[in-house]
Image 1: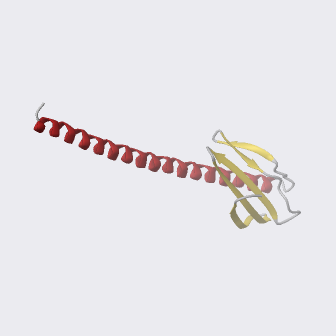
Image 2 (image 1 turned 30 degrees about the vertical axis):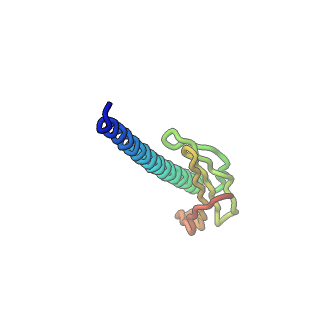
Image 3 (image 1 turned 180 degrees about the vertical axis):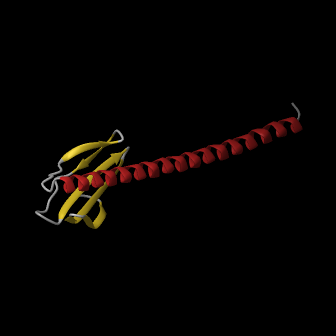
Length: 128
């Protein structure tokens, strides 16, 4: 093979290696972005589930002021936990927790009146 042919082959190999490196870097960045989107979606799902669980507990309190909580319920087939309800007679403290994937969302809701139901605080908490 002559020098020009050798130079051309080496040049093509170097350019191919650089382009392959750029493609791998782009694929890794795209994978990280997509994983981040899935994580946010799970966070939103866990939040919605914990909020639905809290609303269910408040509704049950309006039906029965002695409702104690301390149960796991399913909303659209997904489980969430209503922790033991505290406060006698009011304010009632309702704590709920829901996990979707590896994302957990916890709520602490203060119900200052049951008739009509009045929520005075609705807070996300990191732990109970």
